[in-house]
Image (cartoon, rainbow over all chains, first blue to last red; front, side, top):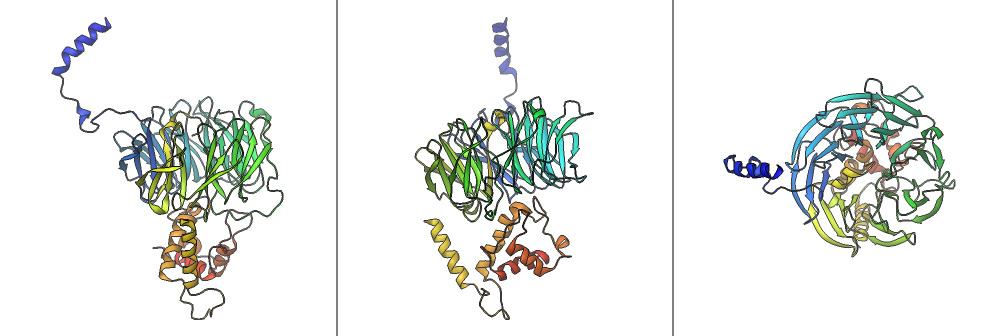
Length: 395
Length: 114
């Protein structure tokens, strides 16, 4: 039966008009090797591929992309781009065009896509809160004003997807973690954990989706919430890691991202100290700290867990350090470009892409030889995002 | 090596720049043209990482003429140099001379950021 259908279609085929998509996309291709690069000043994205390390094209008109980030649809065909100016753009990576766009707030910081891929959530600074949108159409679904225990609207940071199509986020001004279950948009369920500490600057979920960790700027320590057992409440970890010393100036906020588990360890940037903290994922106790040459911003674990590559805040942002995670020490210091803003590994870690903002290029490195493989021109590049994120929790 | 070269260049620029502490402040022409370009770059991209590329605000407050107008310029210069303890605003005195901070404050207050 099936074969007969196929034959019938085969006979019918010559009668059909020639393939209409042929002009736009000469060869059908997948999206699994695509990298999306944010050009922060120009308000555009570069769509690149990581097999031959080439740029395929540019998508413009995305507004103010300073500090922009993005997530992918579950089929990795579309990117949802969160702009500083509150713009939420849906970009078709294959046709390389803007598929939809809304300006949904005055000032935004990032977002997440739900586990089932049907809802996109945006974290807003102004007005402080979270808004949810239909991933297919960008139609608004729900608004959650982040009014903290102090009665004021707070900026929202650290928005991530959680199990059961939920979201977790953190209130910067009032120091709270909220869990959002939007399954009934008419009556969303919000669980609030106030009083977690001073100025939580970012948060993320562990790669297995179980633990939500918020970093504090105003105190030495981090906050841990077990999403399997939220009823047990947030717990302080690495309390007082600065040992009461005067913090060093922080010229760029660290990010809790790319911290993939390295065996039993989790790596976290210290704030106001030139160290990477190593935490045991079971006891949540510090097992070591690795001195580095500046304020770490991104501590990105190579997918095989053997190394982490670290970028730094101004004025050390021309350096990248490679940490050996067996020895918990610095293995190499590289100067791959001026103002390195972001690092992204290929899905299996054989290469690393990094953005050198002040050189206007993206550098592709062989991670084993630690050598430059390619250098791609880009206009003030910042974030680099592999479509492999489409299939990861919390990214 | 490139970093060291950059640092050396920066040092030369700083030494060459007029308006360093210890010089007569009366006829202070401010930073040199080359240094001004560096300062504007720093303002847009490094200050901008918290205050926004367009100075429209982010984790840090907006630095637009309307929001800065009620504030005292000298106080703003002190904020840039000393930071604001208890907030993420760091002290820039290790990076910027007072005349350089004043140059940036003037650009912001007068809405003249190139």
